Image 1 (tube, rainbow, N blue to C red):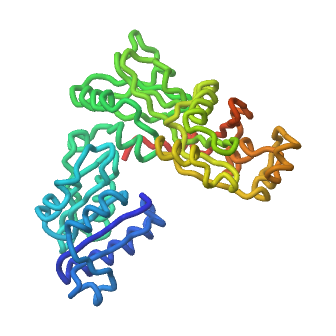
Image 2: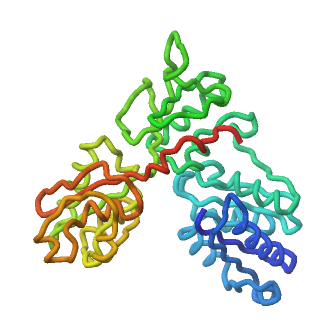
Image 3: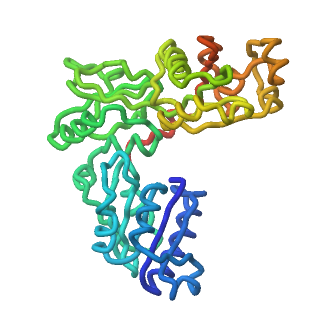
Length: 360
């Protein structure tokens, strides 16, 4: 989680909220997270936290902006505050309620995908209290595919199938799994690795970890896509968003890489105000990164070169170098179409399955 927001309502609650913010941002699971803490004006100064004027306004702002909200106080207060904003577990932030004594930490929203269950456990570890986790797979000690995917930054493509996977596990039916990048040797109960187990029949439903969201090893396949790709682009001034999008999709399709694998759209800094780049990134939920010509020149590797581009922007190739500027490996070399150039790089560290723990 990158951004956590905490709110409290009493003097004791404000003290605990400030303590939680400090300890959560220093802990292993949430190390480096940016924590904001708010409380009533009459207690905020003594606790060293911000004062809030309206609970409704605070909730609306942070529900939209942050990865997790922690309410230090009665669970009913939290439920009433978040009620107008709840959409679904795939887009809602994690929400946890903890009493001001720290005895019980209750995940209210996005227990698996948003990480509320793990956050509640982290809070309970700090306070010496109890995490009250009620999701069915947790109660029954079963593998939760959506929580596992969220923990390892894997995009869940088919939400309905993810629910079916959990339902089948609860009913005791086997779930298949396959991965292009390896899986732990010790799999949870009910999970069958079809690539290494001698099976008379393959399970009807299963999940696959792959950059390709068209692979179908099961009759009902849940695709978990590692978020590991960066797209580098160059384009003529005023290029249409539709043209840029078509070129990007063609480049991804050529390498069987899902758009869900992409995290970043990168280019040179002179393209920072290019409308097409901004619009495509916003539409797809990608972040943008822009590099100076000197930064792109310094990117190590063998890249295609254009004297014209070098005379124009100061570097002989934009798209390939921008794709690799974050440390990725080039997997789609420069493709040109309708005044747009596209390249794709993959962060190989994100595909390292050695830390893909499936227990705990």
